[in-house]
Image 1 (cartoon, rainbow, N blue to C red):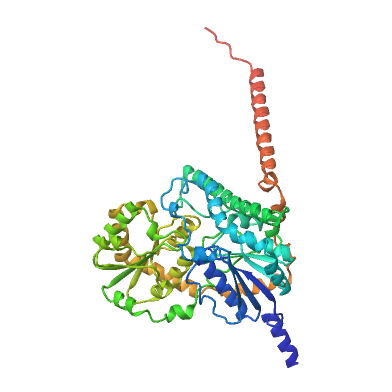
Image 2 (image 1 turned 90 degrees about the vertical axis):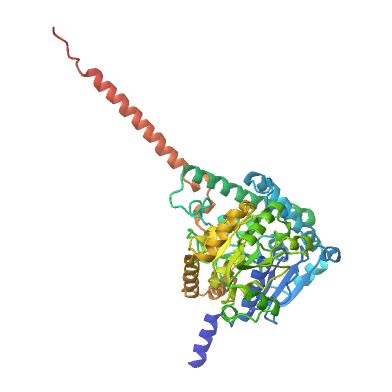
Length: 531
């Protein structure tokens, strides 16, 4: 009886069915890489055999030590010219700061896919033509591929290896994929034009405009990748949408208690928060001595970081001038600014309350309860999660992509302020906003409330991940959770033909009613006038 109970327990917890899993982790952006590596740790911690395959698209540093579980087998795959690119600064997108081309919704929908896709093209082409590595991966007899779906080569790799693929996304959402899994349009649920509950007609029109070209950009990025994949393989391949829909689930980095409430389906699984190590956040590692000294300089310390894809050092000069003016106007605050290169001349322009660092221990600094009071960030999801889970207020300066949504997402909880990147050039406005964040206690109070909510959410994100992942691996061909209407065309999906029918019926009824009224009045005898 006890043995039978133990067997049921093992079946329920998933330990009895160990899977051989390949996780595809393209080295492109640090927050993406961190999300995937920590997912690899979690899956390995639950008893599965995990191989982390990492094709390098850029020479990213600071990736050593991200994987904690020693049982995770790591395969790093480098392009032939990696030694050449490893000595250079990784390619970033400095034009996103103020380029009229890249900051226009229409133009960026056509320019950004090529700009991002060509970063993937060289390594992806080499990988798909490398018979030795393909044979090695095939010989390992993986049962499933988990793929970071921003770079879609892994879906076609899984297709070549004839292995089921489960897409994941390190951001909150990716409409091009969400739509494929039956999630309705998020229009109206994700206010792009601010958080007002009473946005007007023009605001909603602009939201439709932004949403359409955002989806168009994502689809064009996928199509760009399909084109070079077909060229590398030398034959046509399935459409990316058909491949991604073969998975029973789609895993995103959204957290329902942090994110906007959006209608969804059971196939879209939200695991936002799995990257947060609560033990380390509650008991952060000892900071290096240099940071201990910096934190002791003043009562308030503000951390500034704009991520790894768009660098602070590439900021336009007028933006830098506005930031420097803010530094000078707030001499009672210490600023730690992640600035990616040594710049002696620029350093001379800075007041004594500013410290430039090419790299910062961001999680440990944010978790420090003594002096780091506020965070000025680009609003990448990794940073957004970290600031939410440390209960610190943030000034969100989104630069591109999902960062605008992340800024509004965090601001609606009352502990953050979205700030237009173009207004960085306005030193007075930037100063006023930073001072408001530091002085006004409401931002700190609201950030603490959000932290308490996240710490007490009913379902642990890691448990949610593993339950859905193991279910999907057990039933890889399940498709019943995708709504039937998702297979309808545009007219059928929005019932446009039915709406048109009722409009025509109403017009006809109005026409007949009007004619009837006129006929009735014709038969009514007119009164004669008597003198």
